[in-house]
Amino acid sequence: MPFVVDASVAACWIMPDERHAVAERAFARIARDPIVAPCLWWFELRNVLIVNERRGRIDPAQSAKALRLLAALPVAIDTEVDEDALMQLARRRRLTVYDAAYLELALRKRCPLATLDVALADAARAEEAQLIGEGDT
Image 1 (cartoon, one colour):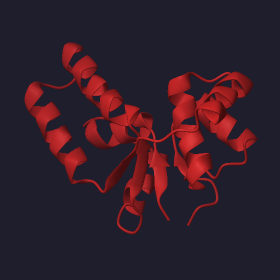
Image 2 (tube, helix red, strand yellow):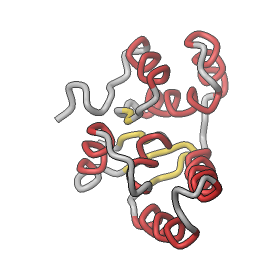
Image 3 (spheres, one colour):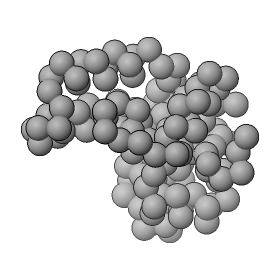
Image 4 (cartoon, one colour):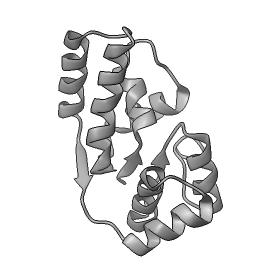
């Protein structure tokens, strides 16, 4: 079954000094299940790289390596959105529209969500969405 991965989880995959059990669990899942992400995921991950270059955590060569890793992943970028559901989620759960986009996608596709964002995970639980790392196999 496909699963949704947000930028916080994918950042763990591409940043050399980041590790988290949920990110590792999601990465292991790629062997059997494809990733689906909203189109903003592409931009968010590139922003993660640029910000971390500016902070001196990584250099352009490490960014290029990270982009190659991302390009090799089985990621389906979803360009559809249920705008009403997105706005309702953002309002009801007090999420940014960016975070609500991940939850809207997980709910619409009925797939689990991998996130390290506490507010997004709380909203997902409240919406009864399955979270990677909580009861998944």
